[in-house]
Amino acid sequence: MQHQLTRDITADERESFRRDGVVCLRSMFDADWIERMQRAIDEAIADPGPMHLDMDQGAAGTFHGDSFVWTWHDDFRAFVFDSPAPEIARQVLGARERVTLFFDTLLVKEPGSEAVTPWHHDQPYWPVDGEQVCTVWTPFDPVTRTSGAVEYLIGSHRWGKRFQPQSFTGDDRYGNSLEPMPDIEARRDQHEFVIFETEPGDCIVHHGLTVHAAPGNSNPGVRRRALATRFCGDDVTYRPEGSFQPLIREPGIESGAPLECDLFPRVWSP
Image (cartoon, rainbow, N blue to C red; front, side, top):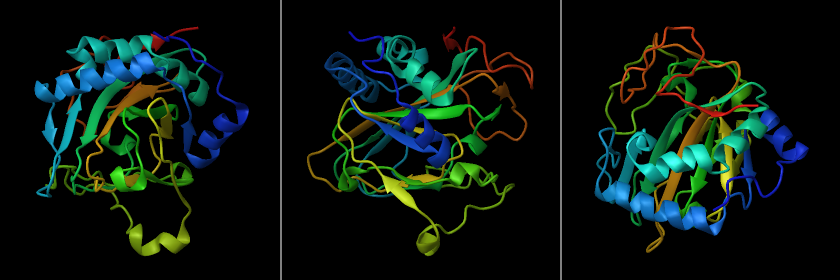
């Protein structure tokens, strides 16, 4: 089973991430990882963890979510420590001292799911400060526009904004303490967007402040199984004040400390 990258990430790919806030990397995971994680995802759906969420929002179909899966499922733990994902994050972020795992999120839109992922960016949900924050979004089924491909607003990570988190379950659990997300759909002519259709083995890396959204899965008979693994680099610290993200347990570190502990383990060192 592949542990190292099959190729280095190119300077152009790293520049795309820096400039656009997102980059699609093709053929980064081998067939063994794909098959192993397909089985593991189905096991995790059948026997979900304590952070499981029903994200259907009252819509038709099934949208399964779960977080911190690595803490209780051996295959997910292997993925975050032993797959190419940490090295992908290191090269894209440009980390030199460390890469730590923040958490993982399982996101599965079954065929016929009408649940829409609203426009949002990730980092305002999270108890972290720093620039080197990314998500490695890895699909384990072919993903097209009709089966739930994510759409990204190019350059939005450089707006200097933190918008109010929205609940994926359709309620108002996060309140309204931050500036609301602009009506992106009403202003599409003012922005530039990108959608990557992907195959198993590809991954998409996006910055923690890149605004993105996704439709439901209207493609009959085609699942959309994906794992979003959140990694942090050298400059990231723990900041629980004002955070909206529930954690599976308390990390036991002080505010302002480097994001590294048993709950946020180091997955890469020089």
